[in-house]
Length: 202
Image 1 (tube, rainbow, N blue to C red):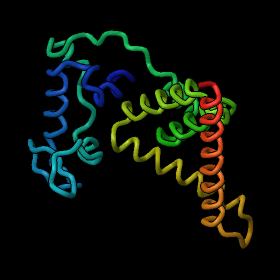
Image 2 (cartoon, rainbow, N blue to C red):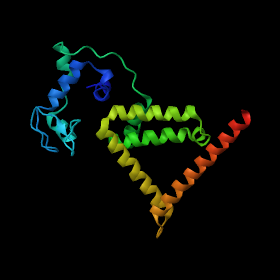
Image 3 (tube, rainbow, N blue to C red):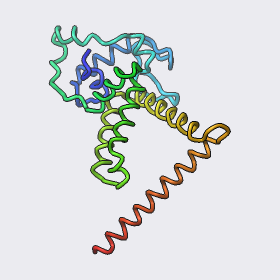
Image 4 (cartoon, helix red, strand yellow):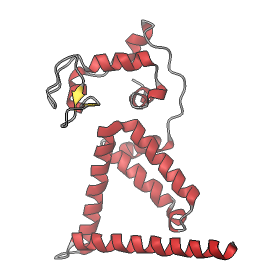
């Protein structure tokens, strides 16, 4: 299975309606041990609504046979779609550290932000839009469960850093609260300064 097929499943615009139908039917061959949906039925959220197939169900069903479907003419050839740079960076991080996908994604996002620290500090809209686009591409690629894994990894990294910064006997939660207040106050001062500049220009 190609990288495009892996992340194209989450973005309807990347595949035909027939491909989506085939993938759905493939995963639903197996019962879901997470929400106890029967074979052929959609997975359900805790509140009872239809949701994406749970990971345990996808694992039980196995990877869809894209190549076989293509040979049988059930799906068209996939057109070349450039892989977002953040996914390439994630793959490079996984190879570099020998880690799984979610950790590689987290490393890629953090490195992307570190590379644009100056633009972030200046509140440059182009920089922030570029970071938003990269994060959005990652979320579309990984889907709900994969994105949740990335958030968990990032939060764990923040906790580790705050514990180290707090030092022995320190309070990481209090330090995090102080850091957030500091960032919010800085952003507000910056916004007020920009508003004053625009007011003088008008």
